[in-house]
Length: 371
Ligand SMILES: *Cc1c(COP(=O)(O)O)cnc(C)c1O
Image 1 (cartoon, rainbow, N blue to C red):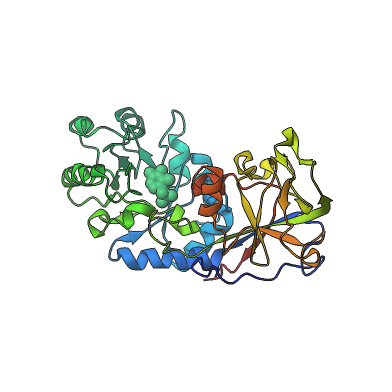
Image 2: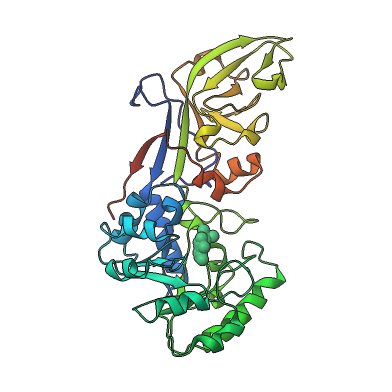
């Protein structure tokens, strides 16, 4: 497993052709054992509550068809997806798992839910009525997101409907000091009390770390499984899952008064070298990384210079010995010393967006996964 505490050690740069597919221009490595270890760590922390797994958006871009079966084999039994289509694609791989669909029931889809044993998370009185007691359904009550969920005042109008789970979602769980956290906890406590005997679920990744009061009967982590830091301001308790390496296509000597890339946004001040890597914004390296992001070669930090273009990104490698930076070598874009959260901070976004934007062109390698 790639541990993020391990910032001092970096693997040596790969030499051209060394064990890498020659055709791959960028390699995304997804450590399924690290996902499993993260799930076990959370499951341990919340016991006796159940630890589910949120695998919506293709398991945050990492491949739900690989991630979900690996977690099932490790003992996870409940999975959340966003859409019915995501549920349908997972069902053949997870015939026995509980699959809940967060977006709930769209008109005309109820029969599909029952045919495939998908459990809708009903978000409104209209959805509860449309479902009309066809089978198991969860109920999402809004306690402060104003996004999805029935308002607590609407509960009185539910009639005899009895959900298999009642849930809500936190707005500020990544800010432990936010007053809203306790307000939502109390609001949800009242909701849960209105459904005696029905399992309750409030916490996603960050709220797990607010404390046991937030755990109720089930927690629903996504981000933390994939190695993002659920505790924002403190060191990441999760293991790193993703490694991204981009191949150097070309290294060129530059000198003042040259400029680099579109818009000539980087002016070369002194003699140096620029390495061009085969990944750009079409691969999820956001344009905001231009003149702000970093990669690593053999543990040395190399800055992005110039704008990120669609298929290419340029790095200033002047500080490294020329032998260390040759075409065909890899620059580490995400790895032990430069996590998804680090890259996200440089790009001005959050790790969630970096993961879900990881490009379709990367050569994907999965490690482990046989629990
Ligand atoms: C996405 C989502 C989660 C998982 O959130 P993380 O912050 O990734 O752990 C849990 N519950 C609901 C309702 C969600 O939409």
